[in-house]
Amino acid sequence: MTETKVEALSFEDALAQLDTIVTTLERGDVPLEDSIAQFEMGMKLARRCEDRLNESEQKVAVLLREGPALVEVDLESGRPIARREDPGDDPYEASPSTDDGRPSSPPPPDDDDIPF
Image (cartoon, rainbow, N blue to C red; front, side, top):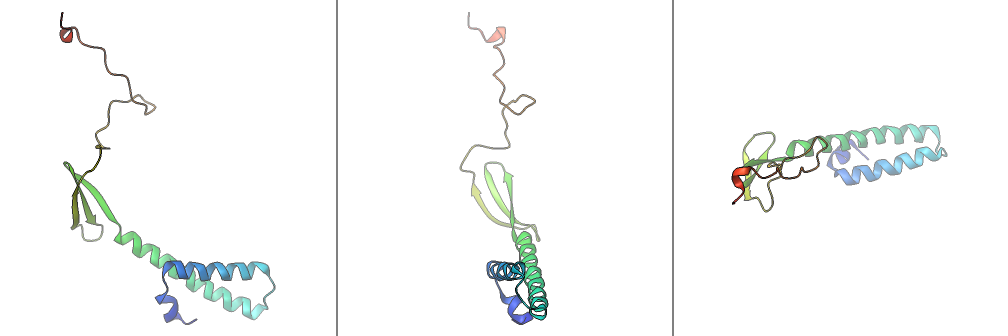
């Protein structure tokens, strides 16, 4: 497989081929010259997988909270991609909790809150 073809592989295809090479090399029944060639190809495939992961990390959007909406932002440019209403509870609006993270019980009523 040539360098150009390796660069065209998806992450999943490159990983599958890398897995096949690793399995073959681990068996140990391949002649030395073939083992070296497969090792070289495995290194190219591993680099391809790493490159695709890095590209994906850069494209991942960050969800930012803006009031009741979630705004999806491109990591590289910082520009908003999409905006949508938050469908659930506000995870950032935490209820009082104990030191170990468990919700605490509500505070006892103030004497001024007692109706009699």
